[in-house]
Image (cartoon, rainbow, N blue to C red; front, top):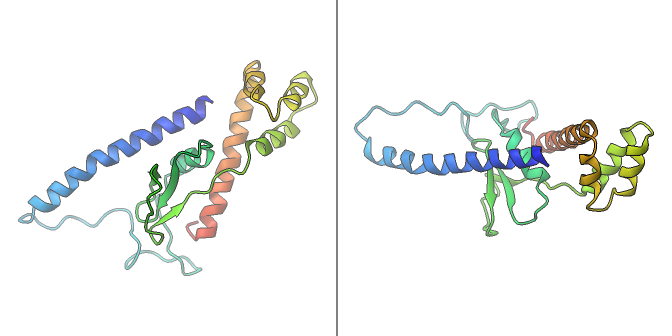
Length: 178
């Protein structure tokens, strides 16, 4: 739970920072017309001048993998997450507003945490802990059973995060971004 919580905090901080910077950039764009043109952005944008992969699809250089992982693992159903193809950031949508489908791709959600739990239990050596986890796999007591053994709890979060990362990498490949 701690890993996911910290990832959500990191995602929120990035969003707040981005929202704070946008008005500043707008102000500068409107009021610095006498200054030399700004340097092109360091991250490529969709369209002309963007590097192409061998398959012919655009390749995004910098993707917020931590934000994608937090979005993928969020089971709340309250927030819809999208990947911004222009800058690689994860964007939240709480009100169900439609976003431009050519620029924003919906981040997939995890099918079932129970499947992850079962796969994790299969990796454990036969023990009392494994039996306890098997009994609680589909209940809310799973986390409290995990909390009784710090090493197993840490292994669970590492396992869950690596599965999430694998799923995200496959999704990015399907989009032609990897």
